[in-house]
Length: 66
Image 1 (spheres, rainbow, N blue to C red):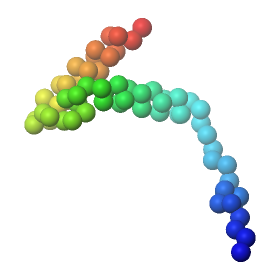
Image 2 (cartoon, rainbow, N blue to C red):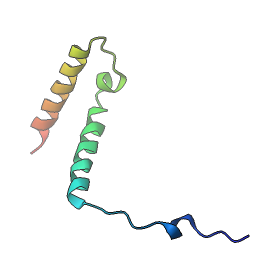
Image 3 (tube, rainbow, N blue to C red):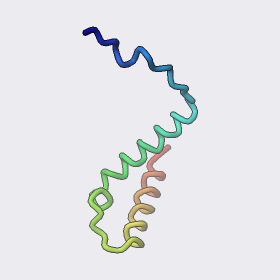
Image 4 (tube, rainbow, N blue to C red):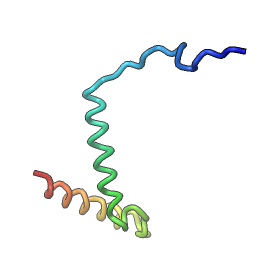
């Protein structure tokens, strides 16, 4: 029995390049935040302390960017 490829029936997906650029920026930011061990493993017991670590990491990351 012959089967057609699965992609033969699919229509092309619309693509908004501006949305994709913004998504890429957010994904790269989260990957940089994962480099912080405390944020990646979530050792903090309280949400306020964890949020403070996220803010600190974000500010330091922002200061390093030109």
